[in-house]
Image 1 (cartoon, rainbow, N blue to C red):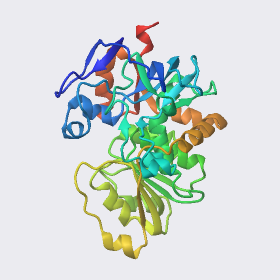
Image 2: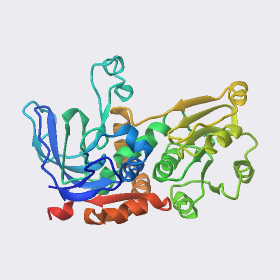
Image 3: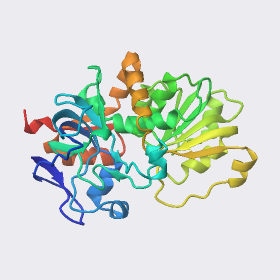
Length: 350
């Protein structure tokens, strides 16, 4: 099969021929149709410090995908050949305290598809049946199915606290921030403001139903509150950028009792005003991945029950390229100006 392959501890990837993955008794083999490029994949391709800390080579990366089941292991009974599926990328141990208590998203021994084990930048990928999510509605297209993983991050973050009638601030208008804005509008937020330094991404955010896009290269969030006619701070903050200035400025603009969820991964230590966190009784919560599989059911329900929601999330994909043009796709994803980049892996089988 064709696959994007990191052959050793160095920068770059190669499109090469690799053996098809084996199928264990509990595994499902999937013909990959579409696969999204994630920030993690950019780290892996560059082989920067973040990649060195999390991967072992050789490796086939890629963890956001949609495809068709072509083979199942002897002990698989809930998935059948021909099913259209996506995959939960976190393969859990099933035996740690969190797993056994039903909190699989908090597994302490997690292995990640495309990070610690071969992934979906290939014609085929093999994952445990327990990580397969079957799409039972044809309205979930291959493009939508490819971004269920990052959409799940947005949904997991947005649904942590009640949002009906609340004023919401999102820092970072990357693909996940954009999708979080669409979720906030879908579930009934009042004012939604989103920040970035890319005018292209702020323009994309307008189609998500936001009230105000803020270019923080020129405008402060305090000014955004005034533009929205707000007399108090934001009720709900979602920090999606990982930028070192985003969380401190968000804290300064929260209402007393405000809730902040942090999905963006900072690359350096961040100093924040802990006195304000205490005296304003703020709640800060870290978010990682998706709840398995409650978030997946919520995603499917939102997308299949609302044409507007489905159109908004679909529009986050701004680049759809054949896998043979993967380098162009990585360049587009790394530019930080567009939305989601998805690769078409059917070019090798059609």
